[in-house]
Length: 142
Image 1 (cartoon, rainbow, N blue to C red):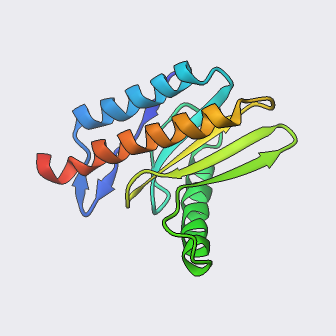
Image 2 (image 1 turned 120 degrees about the vertical axis):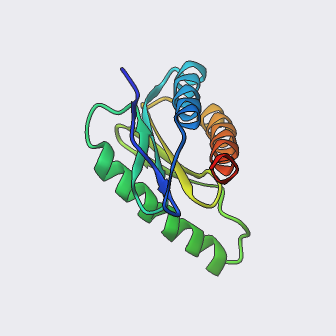
Image 3 (image 1 turned 45 degrees about the vertical axis):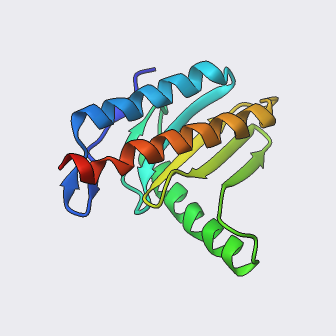
């Protein structure tokens, strides 16, 4: 399935094409490393979808991802559990894993039942770290 890209506005700036392509490549690599991934979405903390490879509902999933990130960060802070790393939602038809990718980006990965959760968590965190590094270069390029 092709990965759709959208323009990301961060503090009034647009993400350069080269950086958007890097985000796209990271999503493709994630799918290669985890065969049970159904799709993923990268969005800003305000819910604006940057890139996705979902069949449907990418805008709604992006919006929910940003809300879930905000709630998860608040919960870990209030509970004194340190910095937020991930939220894993388990359903009867699979999983949704949400990762903070730096202070302004959210990565959500949807996976099928039977997915190796250790692999999902490991690769999800690696991909989130790579996305954070990519988006940290936005201010340096403009």
